[in-house]
Image 1 (cartoon, one colour):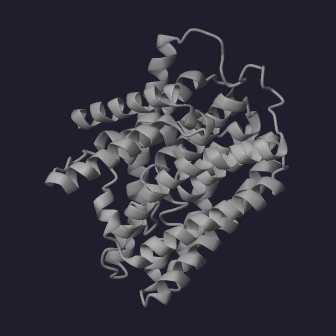
Image 2 (image 1 turned 30 degrees about the vertical axis):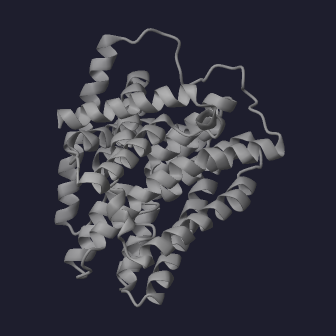
Image 3 (image 1 turned 90 degrees about the vertical axis):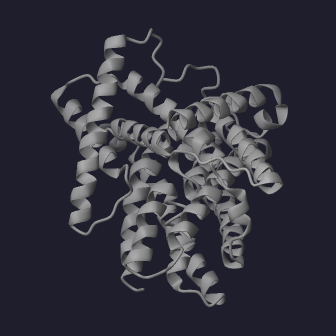
Length: 385
């Protein structure tokens, strides 16, 4: 585990080094973790094809980082904040719900053309793309064990992995295209990000942040087991995220101050390492050997989300700079995962200026609303298989 974590940190350092020195990566707002992770996965492919060399990555630390990030997102979900930004949350939530339905329709229709069971279409639809690795692992197992779809779990995980890479590579360039084409600028380009408090980190607050995150994740895991015993399947991080939402809003109601800055920083560390480790673990030689149905379906799904985001999401959310930043985030969780979405928005902010609305809406929709909608749609769809 520790060696894998060290490799993930090295991958992230490589990505940061290259982004700082290669104008192309900065120009198209490609996150450091995506740059480093994909370069390492390509090196792994060359080593495997040249001499059969393969590195097995222990995913324990990656899973810890994923849980840390999603739990921190739960702490950001204040109901009072949701109410203040409710209209845009509803709009983006409605758009992701429409995309989830569209992804499953495309997946089912495409695999059916190859004579495959429609269940594989769900694995190549919102299970893997909007759902990401957590949902892929959970529902992939359901498709194999309850529906007898051999290899559906591997297809879902491989598709989610490809989706991570696509989301990281497309989000920034598409947003930059929108910004350049429409001459958009940040209204708060020279302002300070309101989520960043100019103060030295407090070690006691950092300790309290670690305690809160650990408790929510640990108890959340027990909640996940309880859900499973009731026949309800959620992603592995969902229990911790849900509990964090409860703790945050109870604290708000009682007037207790939580160490939000420290929680946000720990979550951001988890995000960076999770992305780096997930992408470096891509086994490109396995993806190359996948059936034509998977490759064609992913190509179609990629084209659909580009058109969907460029022509619908951008316009419906206001056709301004915030809309462009939200478009980058929308591609991130629409075909990748919430960490992609947040990383895409942060890359846009770093290059073009602050986007406070996107910074608030994207992680909230991706970390909470998306999963609720996706689980509901998948539950209904599976009942028709």
